[in-house]
Length: 247
Image (cartoon, rainbow, N blue to C red):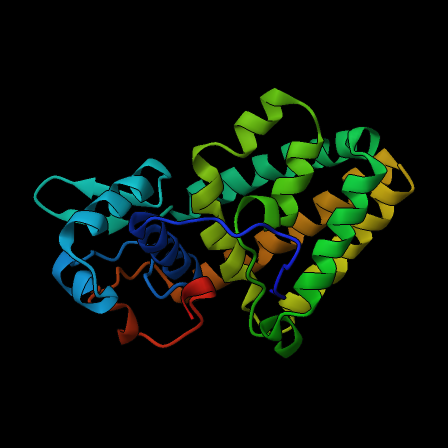
């Protein structure tokens, strides 16, 4: 992302920072779905005490990114391929509907801001290199902005509730396949074009096509990887790879 000098600086607590770093590590795959966390190793890696780390873990449990299992401990949440496929099918229908509503309800200023957001995304080195398409959560997430722009509170609750954070893991995963990052950016630009002309039918079709392509990439990757469960995770630096906002 490019620096945003027009955004006010916000004071963050240590818990906020730790939670952001853990979330970015989960989304980037540095902490893989199903892997078990070691509090001691993470505290050492991040240079923090157990207190703020445990509070950050509880926060990510609330977002369904982490789950606590009796006699096992805390693991990164994971979906079976069948569950993921069904959820992504539902998401395609609902978010397509949200995009159609956004074409009617988003203001011109909101759509212009969304186009500006894509300019930021296009400037990402990982997008230019084709290694991934990382989107920060909420206001800097293209899909989040469109869903909120629909103005339909029921849709917003369904699409931006518990599964929002977990699906971000698989969204990023699909973008790392060679060629997918640039394709996804182009598909986002096609959605913007439909929103700009207030064509709700074209907007829904473009969104559904985009999500259908993303789902196919995720399914192909997961099927290729099989169902192996990763080993317990130690320090964040153990596995190389992009960690979103960690750097």
